[in-house]
Image (cartoon, rainbow, N blue to C red):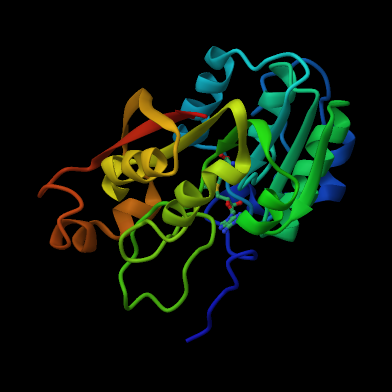
Amino acid sequence: MTTVPAEEADETADGATTLRKVLPAFPPGPALPARGLLRLPGVYRPQADTCLLASAVRRARVPAGARALDLCTGTGVLAIALARAGAEAVLAVDLSRRALLSARVNAALRGLPVRVRRGGLLAAADEGPYDVVVTNPPYVPMPAEQARPDRRCDAGTDGRAVLDPLCEVAPALVAPGGFLLLVQSVMSGVDRSVRLLTAAGLRARVVARAMVPFGPVLSGRKDFLEQSGFVAPQVRKEELVVLRADR
Ligand SMILES: C[S@@+](CC[C@H](N)C(=O)[O-])C[C@H]1O[C@@H](n2cnc3c(N)ncnc32)[C@H](O)[C@@H]1O
């Protein structure tokens, strides 16, 4: 069987969009962050989870002059939201080179103070702590027999491969007086995230919720999700939540 590297795979028709094609028509300026975004092939398309977190960022009142982190940045849409909300300097971190190139171009064309860095939690912690941290990490449970995880969304058989270390390292990311906004599915254990964040010394609570229909990834593994007890039989919606954790 031929496997397609996650960075080259894409679920959408416009996955063929290239830097060369997009740049001339790219509209900088005060558009909503998700409009006119460059998204190189294989980079996560902003979805309901992105939107839920972006509106939580807008409501959270980012302090003017804040140092901010967008961990798992993808196109950089949330880094852009942070900069527009008042952050003075935003670091956008991702494992994917294509994501970082997309994020760098998207922020630069809007003239926003976003810097990118390749890596994961350690790279993010290396430059921390930050006044504001936002993250939309991979959190989808995947079948054990799946040959290769899609790094954009897959997070081990329980959906917590990134969430657990992220919650544990949160004190190294969030400065005293600062806060973290994290989006995840109820399927991957909101109580566990709250417990881990609390054990790490932060005050954590749910600040936003939304029910959204299954997209292509969840629809494609509905049998696994049902059999493993992540969703009730015939349920084809998932609940997303945004957690806020204050230090
Ligand atoms: C669900 S997407 C979110 C993208 C974007 N923030 C958004 O909301 O549209 C998750 C992103 O995290 C990246 N990623 C996966 N595992 C990571 C890790 N351990 N550290 C940093 N980035 C990671 C993926 O490459 C992907 O771009």
